[in-house]
Image (cartoon, rainbow, N blue to C red):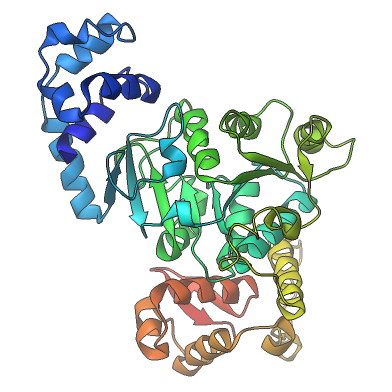
Length: 403
């Protein structure tokens, strides 16, 4: 049956809403596959080109996809599976097949919040996205976003600091990190949560796939937050999907003279819920998920603020700028941040101590063995230590303490 699901999902020119009509008529993908061609003519939704695509019974592409999934250790989830998210099943155009790298998450049992925004945010937007990502995740919510530079990446990085699962939805194949600048983020998300796409592995991230992808971000979510975006943008298309899917829409107020605030401020005028922090979002769902959601302690709030400041300081640091006459800095003037003042957790201090003790570049797998901490937590800890400048990544994804 899995082969027939993939075969149906890969028919050229047939969109998900049309596939739903086909399934409603035939009942199962097997019946679609083995149906005589004249039965396809009874469906008005099918154009001649679509009927021609259904008449192609070759399984060669399907076999290649399944081989790639086995090689890459991907989970293939179909619309017919019992754990397929009900939130997606209720859509008019649900993805028929999902390819999952990482964990399989029971989305219907999670308070999922989508955070979206521009690829070119202001410092304010980055700070808010990072804070929302951390706050939502630390308090028991499940963050879902794309993986673009800007707001998406900032929200994911903030959520990763909590050590809890996060989810990213890609437009192309889950085996192709996109954008390439976020390859480290891609591996971190896959290690602690999941990277998901409706496109088979190897599919390039074409521009036409992004608007279609956005309906999955909003479809999995209870509510979607617009942090910063233009009035007409991909972010606003995600919000349109959310409204069509009867999802809650939240917006971060912004400066009235900022182009990046055009979208959120317009949404607020249309009735979107204004937010000043992650609590404004999660309070809508606490009564539905009392065992999942919790308020953040003052200590965690202090840690959050320090981590946001560290992220922003690293992002704002000028790159590739060399003084005309560089002067050597005396060794005794070089100081490292104090892990106590940074609010490092006991596990983060333990891993840092191990790396310092080894006095060489360490691989994550080695740290898992030495620290007896799961790999997903090790990767999150390494991200935190890098942000604070306590360690540096070297070629081969190895990590060494700053001296």
